Image 1 (cartoon, rainbow, N blue to C red):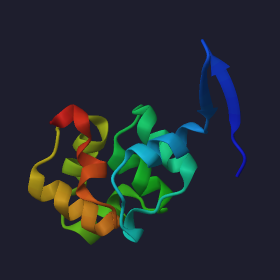
Image 2 (tube, rainbow, N blue to C red):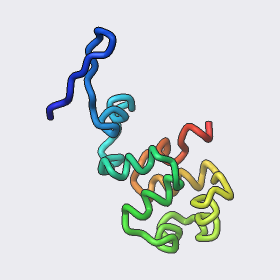
Image 3 (cartoon, one colour):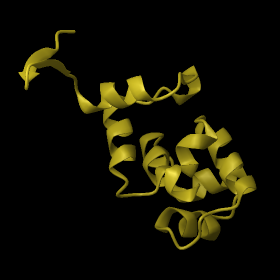
Length: 111
């Protein structure tokens, strides 16, 4: 892949797509976290809860994800809408069901 090289105040900089930059900044991820770049970009935008974004990417309804993870659908809805942050246990169950690392669901705003 070719990247653009620019010079600002005598220093060379390389322009890379945002999702590539974020990948470079992130620790290595396991294959189970391999999500397409558009999904990762949507996650980084932070407009919706990561559980909702990944659930929709996986083609699951709230009811299907709730049943598969053991988290109640009303509780899942509260997590997705931000009314509740979700317990560590619930987020671990959701991460395992969605096949992503827990860190993708927790995010830095909850630290």
